[in-house]
Image 1 (spheres, rainbow, N blue to C red):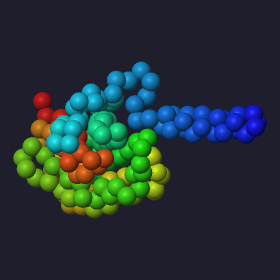
Image 2 (spheres, rainbow, N blue to C red):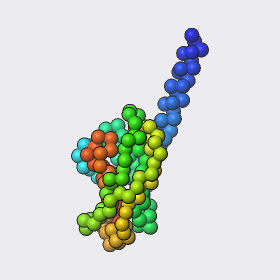
Image 3 (cartoon, rainbow, N blue to C red):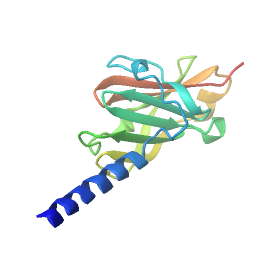
Image 4 (cartoon, rainbow, N blue to C red):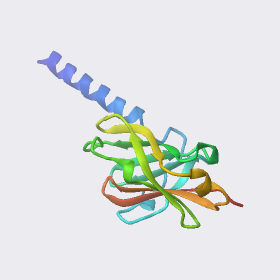
Length: 159
């Protein structure tokens, strides 16, 4: 009986450690304020790096990384939760837009199923160079992720 309890406890601890070790916010970094995202639109804040933006809402953390104008319309997106699964989330309906109203729609979202954790590349169709060139900022808009109507990630480009 003690052996079975110890085995069950060990499995639970290892499973919990695996979930917490892949968190989008590393030790020593400040996460985005949890109040910065709600069911309505809000702009993510407190980037861990200039390329990275973090949104936390409804128990789902989304980290979007854009490596600047040279990356064009390709972004890395990671999602983490500790309740439910993220396997049904499809980011192909995302939008990449600028301050002038130009926008691109998602072309592909390549991320393997992962249950509580998904990471992949989000690619946009069209001329990303024209969207980025001369823009003061660009935004990634992700609709319907983790119960939030939309999540908005903004990168400032102009002075």
